[in-house]
Image 1 (cartoon, rainbow, N blue to C red):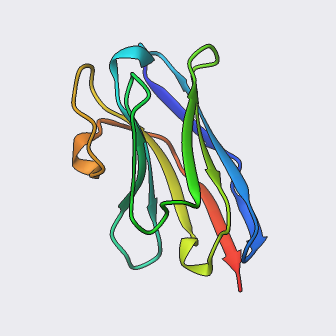
Image 2: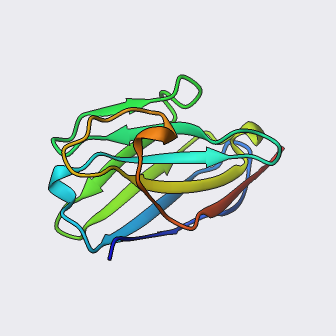
Amino acid sequence: QVQLVESGGGSVQAGGSLRLSCAASGFTRSTRCMGWFRQAPGKEREGVATIGSGGSTSYADSVKGRFTISQDNAKNTLYLQMNSLKPDDTAMYYCAATLPFRACAITSLAYEYWGQGTQVTVAS
């Protein structure tokens, strides 16, 4: 059974940093793309960053230069390092995984499995 469990969210002041983690289990990480998405109240879910099985990454323009997605295959864990946080980054952050051998895309439609989310709140 595929399971994704996020952690690391919290409340920070603008300019601060957080690192989110996503522990994955029940599937072969090496054949899938994984990503981070976020959803603020009243807004649609948006892609933040993706990472392919080979390590290639992509980012939303709004987070480029501030956020870094990475993975530890030995621990089957996905990370999102978030620096220089802004109030606009406030949202529920979700980890997601595709079905095997699917292309990476920074759209939620490409992802089959989702975690329960972790809240990030950035105060001005």
